Length: 325
Image (cartoon, rainbow, N blue to C red; front, side):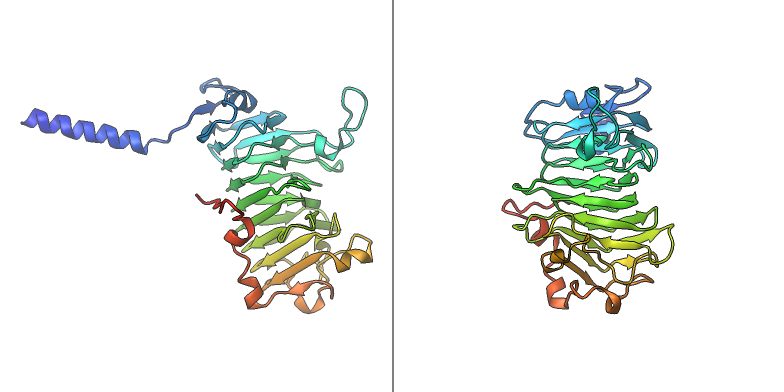
Protein backbone atom coordinates (compact mmCIF):
# COMPACT_ATOMS: atom_id res chain seq x y z
CA UNK A 1 0.00 0.00 0.00
CA UNK A 2 2.87 2.36 0.87
CA UNK A 3 4.49 1.69 -2.50
CA UNK A 4 1.20 2.34 -4.27
CA UNK A 5 0.70 5.67 -2.45
CA UNK A 6 4.31 6.61 -3.23
CA UNK A 7 3.72 5.83 -6.91
CA UNK A 8 0.52 7.92 -6.96
CA UNK A 9 2.27 10.84 -5.19
CA UNK A 10 5.26 10.72 -7.53
CA UNK A 11 3.04 10.51 -10.60
CA UNK A 12 0.97 13.49 -9.42
CA UNK A 13 4.10 15.52 -8.66
CA UNK A 14 5.63 14.84 -12.07
CA UNK A 15 2.37 15.68 -13.81
CA UNK A 16 2.04 18.93 -11.85
CA UNK A 17 5.65 19.86 -12.66
CA UNK A 18 5.12 19.14 -16.35
CA UNK A 19 2.00 21.29 -16.40
CA UNK A 20 3.64 24.20 -14.57
CA UNK A 21 6.94 24.11 -16.49
CA UNK A 22 7.11 26.80 -19.19
CA UNK A 23 6.65 25.29 -22.61
CA UNK A 24 8.69 26.71 -25.49
CA UNK A 25 8.85 25.41 -29.01
CA UNK A 26 12.31 26.85 -29.64
CA UNK A 27 15.05 28.38 -27.49
CA UNK A 28 17.50 30.96 -28.86
CA UNK A 29 20.83 31.40 -27.06
CA UNK A 30 24.01 33.13 -28.20
CA UNK A 31 26.17 30.60 -26.35
CA UNK A 32 24.75 27.65 -28.25
CA UNK A 33 22.79 26.23 -25.31
CA UNK A 34 19.48 26.51 -27.16
CA UNK A 35 18.06 25.27 -30.44
CA UNK A 36 19.42 28.24 -32.40
CA UNK A 37 22.00 31.00 -31.98
CA UNK A 38 20.04 33.64 -33.89
CA UNK A 39 16.45 34.81 -33.76
CA UNK A 40 16.10 34.67 -37.54
CA UNK A 41 17.03 30.98 -37.57
CA UNK A 42 14.25 30.28 -35.07
CA UNK A 43 11.73 32.22 -37.17
CA UNK A 44 12.78 30.32 -40.29
CA UNK A 45 12.07 27.04 -38.47
CA UNK A 46 8.43 27.99 -37.80
CA UNK A 47 6.13 26.16 -40.26
CA UNK A 48 4.40 28.53 -42.66
CA UNK A 49 0.81 29.37 -41.79
CA UNK A 50 0.84 27.21 -38.67
CA UNK A 51 -2.59 27.16 -37.05
CA UNK A 52 -1.37 27.07 -33.43
CA UNK A 53 0.92 29.47 -31.61
CA UNK A 54 4.70 28.97 -31.79
CA UNK A 55 6.57 30.20 -28.71
CA UNK A 56 10.23 31.20 -28.99
CA UNK A 57 12.20 31.81 -25.79
CA UNK A 58 15.17 34.16 -26.21
CA UNK A 59 17.90 33.99 -23.59
CA UNK A 60 19.80 37.01 -22.32
CA UNK A 61 22.18 38.57 -24.79
CA UNK A 62 22.56 41.25 -27.43
CA UNK A 63 21.46 39.85 -30.79
CA UNK A 64 22.63 42.10 -33.60
CA UNK A 65 20.45 40.97 -36.47
CA UNK A 66 18.17 42.42 -39.12
CA UNK A 67 15.12 40.26 -38.47
CA UNK A 68 12.09 39.59 -40.66
CA UNK A 69 8.93 37.84 -39.47
CA UNK A 70 7.32 37.00 -42.81
CA UNK A 71 3.58 37.14 -43.37
CA UNK A 72 3.53 33.33 -43.53
CA UNK A 73 4.85 33.09 -39.95
CA UNK A 74 1.55 33.38 -38.12
CA UNK A 75 0.90 33.47 -34.36
CA UNK A 76 4.52 33.64 -33.24
CA UNK A 77 5.46 34.67 -29.70
CA UNK A 78 8.84 35.97 -28.52
CA UNK A 79 9.51 35.72 -24.78
CA UNK A 80 12.70 37.30 -23.52
CA UNK A 81 14.54 36.07 -20.46
CA UNK A 82 14.85 39.65 -19.20
CA UNK A 83 13.56 42.83 -20.83
CA UNK A 84 16.71 44.83 -20.04
CA UNK A 85 19.25 42.20 -21.10
CA UNK A 86 17.46 40.42 -23.96
CA UNK A 87 18.21 42.91 -26.72
CA UNK A 88 17.43 42.70 -30.45
CA UNK A 89 19.39 45.45 -32.15
CA UNK A 90 20.56 46.73 -35.51
CA UNK A 91 22.06 49.99 -36.79
CA UNK A 92 20.61 50.77 -40.21
CA UNK A 93 19.30 54.28 -40.92
CA UNK A 94 17.45 56.00 -43.75
CA UNK A 95 20.46 57.64 -45.41
CA UNK A 96 22.69 54.60 -45.11
CA UNK A 97 23.53 53.21 -48.53
CA UNK A 98 22.55 49.78 -49.76
CA UNK A 99 24.81 47.71 -52.00
CA UNK A 100 23.70 49.74 -55.03
CA UNK A 101 24.60 53.07 -53.45
CA UNK A 102 20.96 54.01 -52.82
CA UNK A 103 19.50 55.31 -49.55
CA UNK A 104 17.85 52.54 -47.54
CA UNK A 105 15.01 54.90 -46.67
CA UNK A 106 12.91 54.99 -43.51
CA UNK A 107 11.20 51.64 -44.07
CA UNK A 108 14.51 50.06 -45.06
CA UNK A 109 16.15 51.20 -41.84
CA UNK A 110 14.18 48.91 -39.50
CA UNK A 111 15.94 46.30 -37.41
CA UNK A 112 12.86 44.08 -36.99
CA UNK A 113 9.98 43.70 -39.46
CA UNK A 114 6.71 42.20 -38.23
CA UNK A 115 4.51 41.10 -41.13
CA UNK A 116 3.03 37.90 -39.69
CA UNK A 117 -0.38 38.31 -38.02
CA UNK A 118 -0.95 37.45 -34.37
CA UNK A 119 2.60 38.29 -33.23
CA UNK A 120 3.29 38.72 -29.49
CA UNK A 121 6.40 39.81 -27.63
CA UNK A 122 7.16 39.88 -23.91
CA UNK A 123 10.17 41.10 -21.93
CA UNK A 124 12.37 42.17 -24.85
CA UNK A 125 14.31 45.30 -25.81
CA UNK A 126 14.09 46.33 -29.46
CA UNK A 127 16.77 48.84 -30.40
CA UNK A 128 18.04 50.82 -33.33
CA UNK A 129 21.61 51.63 -32.32
CA UNK A 130 22.48 53.92 -35.25
CA UNK A 131 22.27 56.99 -33.00
CA UNK A 132 21.04 60.50 -33.89
CA UNK A 133 21.44 60.16 -37.66
CA UNK A 134 17.91 60.93 -38.81
CA UNK A 135 15.23 58.30 -39.40
CA UNK A 136 16.27 54.99 -37.88
CA UNK A 137 13.48 52.52 -37.09
CA UNK A 138 13.82 49.90 -34.35
CA UNK A 139 10.62 47.98 -35.18
CA UNK A 140 8.26 48.14 -38.16
CA UNK A 141 4.92 46.45 -37.46
CA UNK A 142 2.53 45.74 -40.33
CA UNK A 143 0.88 42.47 -39.28
CA UNK A 144 -2.59 42.59 -37.73
CA UNK A 145 -3.21 41.72 -34.05
CA UNK A 146 0.32 42.48 -32.82
CA UNK A 147 0.79 42.74 -29.06
CA UNK A 148 3.79 43.80 -26.98
CA UNK A 149 4.02 43.39 -23.20
CA UNK A 150 6.73 44.81 -20.95
CA UNK A 151 9.01 45.64 -23.86
CA UNK A 152 11.42 48.51 -24.54
CA UNK A 153 11.78 50.37 -27.84
CA UNK A 154 15.02 52.35 -28.02
CA UNK A 155 16.11 54.82 -30.66
CA UNK A 156 16.03 58.44 -31.75
CA UNK A 157 13.94 59.57 -34.74
CA UNK A 158 11.15 57.21 -35.90
CA UNK A 159 11.78 54.54 -33.27
CA UNK A 160 8.47 52.66 -33.57
CA UNK A 161 6.86 52.44 -37.01
CA UNK A 162 3.29 51.23 -36.58
CA UNK A 163 3.31 50.71 -40.29
CA UNK A 164 -0.09 49.19 -40.66
CA UNK A 165 -1.48 49.66 -44.14
CA UNK A 166 -3.27 52.45 -45.92
CA UNK A 167 -5.98 50.07 -47.13
CA UNK A 168 -5.97 47.16 -44.67
CA UNK A 169 -6.29 47.53 -40.91
CA UNK A 170 -3.42 46.71 -38.58
CA UNK A 171 -4.38 46.57 -34.93
CA UNK A 172 -1.60 46.83 -32.37
CA UNK A 173 -1.43 46.71 -28.57
CA UNK A 174 1.36 47.91 -26.29
CA UNK A 175 1.14 47.37 -22.53
CA UNK A 176 3.62 48.45 -19.86
CA UNK A 177 6.20 49.30 -22.50
CA UNK A 178 8.94 51.95 -22.59
CA UNK A 179 9.24 53.87 -25.86
CA UNK A 180 11.86 56.56 -26.37
CA UNK A 181 12.96 58.88 -29.13
CA UNK A 182 13.36 62.41 -30.40
CA UNK A 183 11.21 63.23 -33.43
CA UNK A 184 8.02 61.38 -34.44
CA UNK A 185 9.14 58.36 -32.44
CA UNK A 186 5.73 56.70 -32.69
CA UNK A 187 4.35 57.00 -36.22
CA UNK A 188 2.34 55.25 -38.91
CA UNK A 189 -1.10 54.15 -40.15
CA UNK A 190 -2.05 51.50 -37.58
CA UNK A 191 -4.79 51.63 -35.00
CA UNK A 192 -2.87 51.15 -31.75
CA UNK A 193 -3.69 51.09 -28.04
CA UNK A 194 -0.92 51.99 -25.57
CA UNK A 195 -1.64 51.22 -21.92
CA UNK A 196 0.57 51.95 -18.92
CA UNK A 197 3.46 52.91 -21.21
CA UNK A 198 6.26 55.42 -20.66
CA UNK A 199 6.91 57.73 -23.62
CA UNK A 200 10.32 59.32 -23.14
CA UNK A 201 11.58 62.30 -25.17
CA UNK A 202 15.35 62.50 -25.57
CA UNK A 203 15.84 65.80 -27.41
CA UNK A 204 14.19 69.21 -27.45
CA UNK A 205 11.97 70.44 -30.29
CA UNK A 206 10.56 66.99 -30.83
CA UNK A 207 7.23 65.26 -31.37
CA UNK A 208 5.94 62.17 -29.60
CA UNK A 209 3.64 61.04 -32.42
CA UNK A 210 3.23 61.43 -36.16
CA UNK A 211 0.09 59.48 -36.97
CA UNK A 212 -1.00 58.91 -40.56
CA UNK A 213 -4.38 57.39 -39.74
CA UNK A 214 -6.45 56.49 -42.82
CA UNK A 215 -9.58 58.61 -43.21
CA UNK A 216 -11.69 55.43 -42.99
CA UNK A 217 -10.35 54.46 -39.54
CA UNK A 218 -12.42 55.56 -36.56
CA UNK A 219 -9.45 55.42 -34.19
CA UNK A 220 -5.72 56.00 -34.57
CA UNK A 221 -3.48 56.07 -31.49
CA UNK A 222 -5.00 55.78 -28.03
CA UNK A 223 -2.74 56.35 -25.01
CA UNK A 224 -4.39 55.17 -21.81
CA UNK A 225 -2.87 55.68 -18.35
CA UNK A 226 0.50 56.49 -19.89
CA UNK A 227 3.35 58.65 -18.61
CA UNK A 228 5.19 61.21 -20.73
CA UNK A 229 8.72 61.96 -19.53
CA UNK A 230 11.79 63.68 -20.94
CA UNK A 231 15.30 64.85 -20.17
CA UNK A 232 14.72 67.94 -22.29
CA UNK A 233 13.99 71.63 -21.61
CA UNK A 234 10.60 72.72 -20.36
CA UNK A 235 7.88 73.23 -23.00
CA UNK A 236 9.95 71.80 -25.86
CA UNK A 237 7.94 68.75 -27.02
CA UNK A 238 4.68 68.44 -28.93
CA UNK A 239 2.19 65.64 -28.27
CA UNK A 240 1.97 65.05 -31.98
CA UNK A 241 1.75 66.30 -35.54
CA UNK A 242 -0.18 64.85 -38.49
CA UNK A 243 1.99 62.93 -40.92
CA UNK A 244 -1.17 62.60 -43.00
CA UNK A 245 -4.25 64.87 -42.88
CA UNK A 246 -6.62 62.55 -40.98
CA UNK A 247 -4.31 61.70 -38.08
CA UNK A 248 -6.17 60.62 -34.95
CA UNK A 249 -4.55 60.61 -31.49
CA UNK A 250 -6.10 60.60 -28.03
CA UNK A 251 -4.46 60.73 -24.60
CA UNK A 252 -6.67 59.51 -21.73
CA UNK A 253 -5.70 59.82 -18.06
CA UNK A 254 -2.06 60.44 -18.96
CA UNK A 255 0.61 62.12 -16.85
CA UNK A 256 2.46 64.78 -18.80
CA UNK A 257 5.79 66.23 -17.73
CA UNK A 258 6.78 69.88 -17.96
CA UNK A 259 8.56 69.19 -21.26
CA UNK A 260 5.20 69.17 -23.08
CA UNK A 261 4.40 72.43 -24.86
CA UNK A 262 1.32 74.27 -23.55
CA UNK A 263 -0.23 74.32 -27.04
CA UNK A 264 0.23 70.56 -27.22
CA UNK A 265 -0.20 69.95 -30.93
CA UNK A 266 1.44 71.00 -34.21
CA UNK A 267 -0.17 71.22 -37.67
CA UNK A 268 3.04 70.28 -39.55
CA UNK A 269 3.10 73.69 -41.25
CA UNK A 270 -0.27 73.20 -42.92
CA UNK A 271 -3.37 74.93 -41.55
CA UNK A 272 -5.57 72.60 -43.64
CA UNK A 273 -4.58 69.77 -41.27
CA UNK A 274 -6.37 71.63 -38.47
CA UNK A 275 -9.69 70.79 -40.14
CA UNK A 276 -8.99 67.08 -40.64
CA UNK A 277 -6.73 65.86 -37.82
CA UNK A 278 -8.52 64.68 -34.67
CA UNK A 279 -6.46 65.32 -31.55
CA UNK A 280 -8.02 64.83 -28.13
CA UNK A 281 -7.26 64.52 -24.41
CA UNK A 282 -9.16 63.42 -21.36
CA UNK A 283 -8.15 64.26 -17.82
CA UNK A 284 -4.47 64.78 -18.55
CA UNK A 285 -2.51 65.66 -15.42
CA UNK A 286 0.96 66.80 -14.44
CA UNK A 287 3.04 69.89 -15.22
CA UNK A 288 2.51 69.51 -18.97
CA UNK A 289 -1.27 69.15 -18.79
CA UNK A 290 -2.65 72.55 -19.75
CA UNK A 291 -6.05 72.16 -21.33
CA UNK A 292 -6.73 75.90 -21.42
CA UNK A 293 -3.61 76.59 -23.51
CA UNK A 294 -4.07 73.80 -26.04
CA UNK A 295 -4.58 74.70 -29.70
CA UNK A 296 -8.21 75.49 -30.42
CA UNK A 297 -8.49 72.78 -33.06
CA UNK A 298 -7.83 70.00 -30.52
CA UNK A 299 -10.49 68.70 -28.14
CA UNK A 300 -11.00 67.87 -24.49
CA UNK A 301 -13.26 64.83 -24.34
CA UNK A 302 -16.39 64.71 -22.21
CA UNK A 303 -16.97 61.80 -19.81
CA UNK A 304 -19.43 60.32 -22.27
CA UNK A 305 -17.01 60.59 -25.18
CA UNK A 306 -14.11 59.17 -23.19
CA UNK A 307 -16.22 56.15 -22.21
CA UNK A 308 -16.29 55.04 -25.85
CA UNK A 309 -12.51 54.57 -25.82
CA UNK A 310 -12.29 50.94 -24.80
CA UNK A 311 -10.03 48.15 -26.04
CA UNK A 312 -13.07 46.38 -27.48
CA UNK A 313 -14.19 49.44 -29.44
CA UNK A 314 -10.73 50.45 -30.63
CA UNK A 315 -9.21 47.05 -31.41
CA UNK A 316 -12.04 44.51 -31.35
CA UNK A 317 -13.01 44.53 -35.00
CA UNK A 318 -15.14 41.90 -36.70
CA UNK A 319 -13.22 39.10 -34.97
CA UNK A 320 -13.60 40.64 -31.49
CA UNK A 321 -9.85 40.54 -30.90
CA UNK A 322 -8.84 40.70 -27.25
CA UNK A 323 -5.06 41.21 -26.99
CA UNK A 324 -5.02 40.03 -23.39
CA UNK A 325 -6.15 36.53 -24.35
